[in-house]
Picture 1 (cartoon, rainbow, N blue to C red):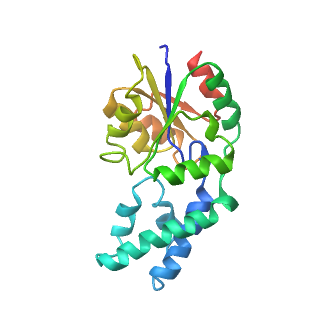
Picture 2: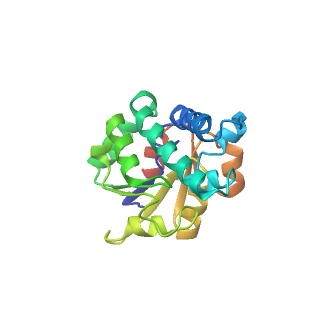
Picture 3: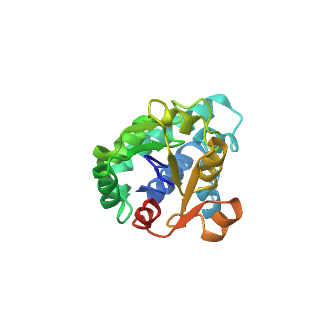
Length: 212
């Protein structure tokens, strides 16, 4: 299939933000929920879903909930420069795709401004044509709205979604486009096979083979 548009998730796909998110979650809980000691599995559960959905599991108090969200964003921005960087071969692949005139878009369940900041720190913002964050979507992935917005204005879009979680693969399915699961974050090859990813790669360079 001939594609003209590649849609990427951000965290866990283009940017290694694992340590950033883990440190941010821990510092937020130390400040807002000092009596709760999170397990590694509970910290990992913050990867992928909307932040609001994650914190809603820990409090029904609106004031505390809002404080936790604000505190998370505060620490997340403070720690970006220390913990955010692109995965191996991401910059090289984005550069190659841009030279081949692909439309490169990010659709992420993360705030648009924070996505842009991370891309700038990693030195890859110049390759991205459009960013659809959680504040722009009508509903988060796996809802297809972000992908549909990403394709608005592109003539005869033939798109491929690249992501590291089930949310990305299911969003692609719901939008009627093909998907690529990447194995360098948390989701394993067997899990991608189970949810029906069309392609699975272990290195970003392999994406170029799919597009040949």
